[in-house]
Image (cartoon, rainbow, N blue to C red; front, side):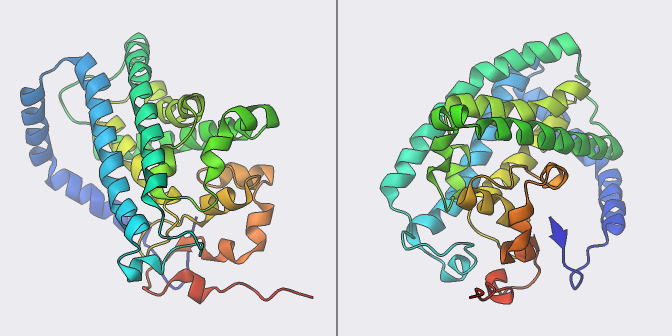
Length: 300
């Protein structure tokens, strides 16, 4: 993930700004959290298991529905212009969307026992169950740790799933989509969903014994980025999704979420050769990046 030089982001200023917002709105956030606790109770099992399941499921379907409307209708046209791949089978037939939705729902139901086991693991490990919200610096530091654990867990589990034995039996289902759509982010075999989706996500909060508030922020970020990475779009002001789109197109390249381990292991060499690598950046212009960085003419 890169930032184009003509569109710099002063991250140190953003950090100071969000720190200021957190401090000034701290009392408001705490009061809202207190009301939330008073409304839904202080039962840790209910919060961690059913609260997490309900929250992440709603987030997924709300976000996926926005993308799916575009995928099924081909509207609005300005949005379709930002599609990474131009495929003749677009807009997507609703029958395919229905097939994907069915499998995603199955995986989400299967995640309930995972959350139950996760709760008892958290109790065994010990976690922050205080009613006081954590500080901004703690939230940020734990989110960074969760991101790194996600990169490690997802990369290596993903590499394993691409071994012939596991690919044929489990991962091939997810790769039915050479040009992915957002709702298909969790379209996979249940075994893959547990090993490569749920486990890496849970790793960070478990190792740190995170406050449920931090865990929910982390899951929110993850749902957003996962849907975006599978959307097939590269919208202005949105994180780049070219890397994972390239993985679906070429299958045996670019396995990671961030690209850190791909770089270390050299599994992004093919990705770096093409125009998709140049497009894999934050864009703050309304012109589609595939127009700014068209395919290079083939050498004869």
